[in-house]
Length: 113
Length: 113
Image (cartoon, rainbow over all chains, first blue to last red; front, top):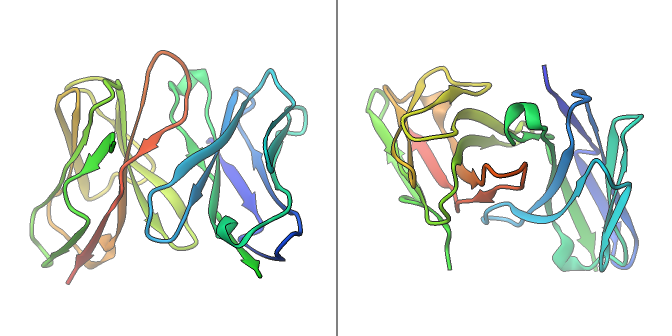
């Protein structure tokens, strides 16, 4: 069935460094890949997404890249700040399942001052 | 400007009780979803609905049922609560016009004792 694998499960970086989280997906029909940030005690919030007709998308310090051939996509955070500390989830969805998102297991990012 | 509202933030119930978790959205979204979130397991889909009075099983439907009598409201029902249903429950909604990201509710942390 559909599956999204996310790595690493935990990531610790120094403030100012870059952080990269990677996901792979199994369903080749998937065409939409959002990333969510969940701060402690709060709801997941959409931070960036990418569709299959695009290879890369940037929003200030955040970027997402997609490799459809290899079926993997990554979140890149540059110049990390302590407020970037959170759990990040990747997800995938396709038209065939009417937008039902399949989530990765989550990555707990810790940015140390 | 909360768009997806879950009726309870924290809930403590006894084993065997029937439990209702309510979710209301004001964005006129067709799709609604119930997930449970457990450490290390990410977000797992319990049930979802694409229309009023319509429901489909997700990955872990055992022990749960749902009700969608109105477009804006999607209820999760634990027929006979058990301790292994202690978890964070997240409701989400999305529009049906295209594959798009979810808007999540704040979550209900349910403890079954």
